[in-house]
Length: 458
Ligand code: F0G
Image (tube, rainbow, N blue to C red; front, side, top):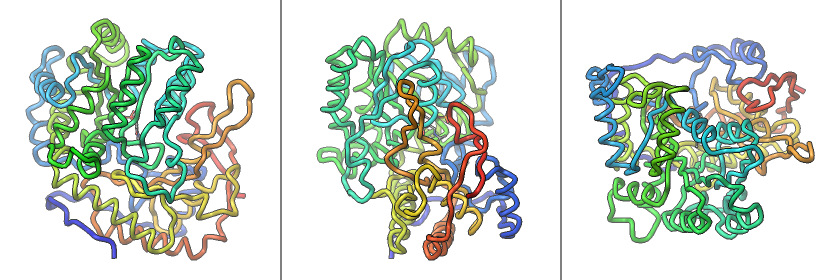
């Protein structure tokens, strides 16, 4: 049996959930155009759509919110937030934003021109969409093992350094306004990036004078993997590891809805003064005044506390253990997942589980539909619905290497028996795997179609 680590907290406020009947679930999914984003949360039993903004705040975070200072400019909340930002991330400047994509939008507005390339290990959906919306070319250069689900390597989110160097040479550094890396690699199984790789990536970008921006959403989880797996880091604190990670970069985008353990928030951080001045102006246009950006003062306080809680080792130990428990339990019953488990989610290899459904008929969507119908569980397709795109040069559809369904685990929200329930639901699905059918699209927007597309069963 998979190992577990008891929760390092007890529960003093509860949010009821209910499992509606199978007939009601079938009707709800049909009504939603077979897109789980269209479901009402009341109709969901276990919601694994995302770990973003869905985590449970602590009593310390709620208490800090009461002290929020809502002054338009120069609020105490801002200064408390800034002190934590300076200590943890250490960039010279930052602007607070209402979530991660607002930071990405400001970055793209300032730096990115039509036809330019943005390399990363892998971009997540909003980053990719924002780059494409500006006419840019997001390019994924993660190591090859990332696409081999069964390959258990320790830092499967690492950039392929040779590919990165060759890519910059081929496209020309003048056509690459900034380079990124995502920690942990959300589009590729939530896999971590090693410090060694971050150092090497930083060196490559610096060699070509390309600003290096870290997509920092799950920085604390990434640092914990470094502590557990990378020689030389076992005796360092998470804070020390995080500080070293960000000392290698020129800036960062952050969604505090992840490792800020908050319901909203984010930032764009940088060292360059000129970049900061431009970001501040964009912020005022798009979000708000620089001492609150897109947030209320109380949100800044919740995040300032959340960043620190996200780096506590008993919490990180439990967090990784819970996700690993789910992943290993699924492997035991024959569900193929991206191995080894990451910290924020388990990714089922739907292409492998439902090999009779071709990627043009969306095996991931077939699986996420089955999970909802069978158990009231909401998980998100991260395969051809989310990531296939039409090549701007050839007009051909390019499909991703893997057809995945992600079960993201909100922080401090579900218990071990919820994990067991998920495993039991998937056991029933595995038994009938050959019966599930694919889908066709009846409506899709041009960009980020997975959020609003409509489908019909084949
Ligand atoms: N970067 C990464 C790696 C992300 O995972 C996300 C969001 C963003 C940027 C954008 O942040 O949502 O605050 O605007 N990911 C969520 C998810 C939505 O479900 O993984 P945002």
